Amino acid sequence: MAYTLEDEFGDIIGKARRGQNLSHSEIATAAGITEAELARMEQYTLKPTETQVFRLAEVLNLDGAKLLDIATEQWEPEPPQQTDDANLEVITISAPVGGWPVNAYLLICKATDDATIIDTAAHPELILEQLDARNVNPTTILLTHAHSDHTDGLSQLQTETGCETYIHKNEPKPQSNNKLHEVIHGDVLSVGELMVSVVNTPGHTTGGCSFLTQNVAFVGDAIFAGSVGGPNISYQDEIESVRDNLLSLPDIVRLFPGHGPSTTVGEEKLHNPFF
Image (cartoon, rainbow, N blue to C red):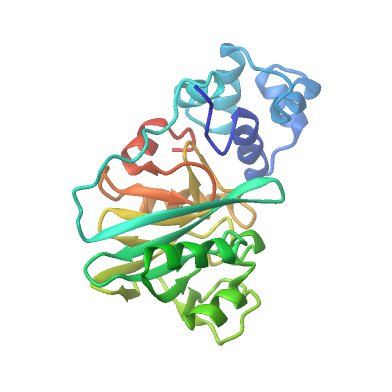
């Protein structure tokens, strides 16, 4: 099967090493490998042995069995099944930015045909095409974080749709035509008849947040299938906020990330080596 995860083995050990402020030398010495071997593993040019996977997992405080499944490409999340929830629909819009796919989403209230745009994937024209094709009414734009691959094109979307835009109070503010509405953990926004809760998931960015409604959550770059976003601000905050505010949700909640395939809380608890 084609391996679809956003992060490979090399990405995972690199993020864990950098997040814990550990050098190549420290990790290589503790794991009994050379610095050159570690560098090649992080660059995807050297596949680790099973013994090396478990040694690296121990040194990096990762789950060895889960890490081995990803290193040997033995796991990827099950694709979404037909939902019994007649109240909402999620449309994924994935397009390359700088050569790598980025996800934006439409969350549609099926009772009213109102929709919110979640992130932009830096391709506003694709979002506008989907809005027209589905004949839905965009009411808001929600931003999980301010990185350009998730917010470029925001001004065009604001102009074309007239939507107000919401972003976490602690997040740096992207270029915008209008004043951005600030939200905090626990705030609730409405999309038609859907109630969308704001959940803190910082660490990748200062004010990264997720948006939760019923059994779906839009998580930006806080967590990917089998991995996490780069802990640019705080590795500890990222791990703790994801564990406490996302992985504490029911197993059936589907997580829609900023990159890579969707997954579920249950699958991440079983397969994500960071937890």
